[in-house]
Image 1 (cartoon, rainbow, N blue to C red):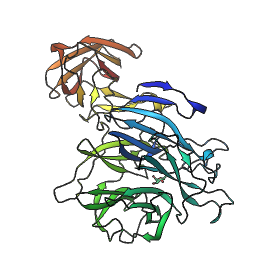
Image 2 (cartoon, rainbow, N blue to C red):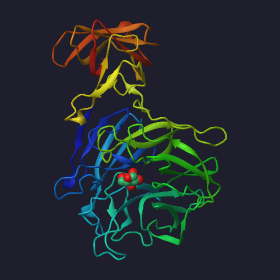
Image 3 (cartoon, helix red, strand yellow):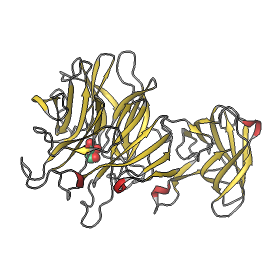
Image 4 (cartoon, rainbow, N blue to C red):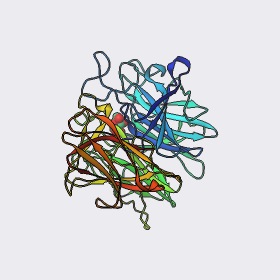
Length: 448
Ligand code: FUB
């Protein structure tokens, strides 16, 4: 993880940092959830929720604790910039600052303005009763703020997980959830609903549904939503020829999270000709699933318009630069004897290490490493070995040609070890990592 603090502006609101992560989770220095991804001006912006840990007097232990939002951007899905905090519960006039309930948001652009929609709990004396979820809007002239929250939440909307969709005819719709999924037209000012609230009734009746996200593809409206069909949420979709239905329940986009994370929440974008699904899991907090982390994986439509199921990966979608610290623990594939674990279970933001044993099934594959045109001459690995191990880097297959062999001496502390790279490897390569002599543990590798 590369973290470069770039600028600190007024009141510490805009602390901007560049995070290099072509892998999943996308952000590893803080918890992030409920990613609403958008493409604005040729760049991807992700507006997630921001999970934090409860501390005495701040949030409810054992539950979601969320006090603000950050926005992240990338023009290559590999290098992500954290633009810092954009809205906080203390800056929203109607929000209860004791509630720590800044849940899943969304953002949309219209006529050069950016509208950021977020749910949170109203102050105890708010109209409509004590402490209910309402949806607010904050506006900005840029995708990264500063965002100014409206003085009051949107009238007539009670619930969470706002999502905004602008149809080709210019009509904007607001979707949200509260047991059911609801929708209403938005007035051109994007701040008020127009006409009646519609309950989208053609969806599964049993099991919680939430997190609606409307997406239009080839003339079909895809209402996508997390739903508990069995034990935890999976991502499903229903299709229609109109933004307000009727909808036909059509399929599953992603099965229940393999880590057991009870929630999932997603968005879909098309960027440079490829569709992507943004969603979340709980990689950095395996034993507490209310501290989550956002992911992205490629999504494909079948020719009949159905969506191919997305299988969550650790490798993610970005091309990894050979000169970055390549986290091979976010592998594309591995033999069954290779394992991944936290480097330090007490400091999970430090990330993971890979254990590469001497075994035919001990390999790790890491795809899409860009060595550039002029190639690379040396490789360094932060590694450790109990015996005298050698980390072999191969191309093509687990038994393919070795392009570098890094010797890792026995029993030393974690350290950086280097070796020459054969043939000045260039272009984009899929790499395989194997071990010789003794098991090698690897934090990262990087080429020069
Ligand atoms: O992040 C809090 C809530 O969990 C969201 O609003 C839901 O969609 C679920 O992800």
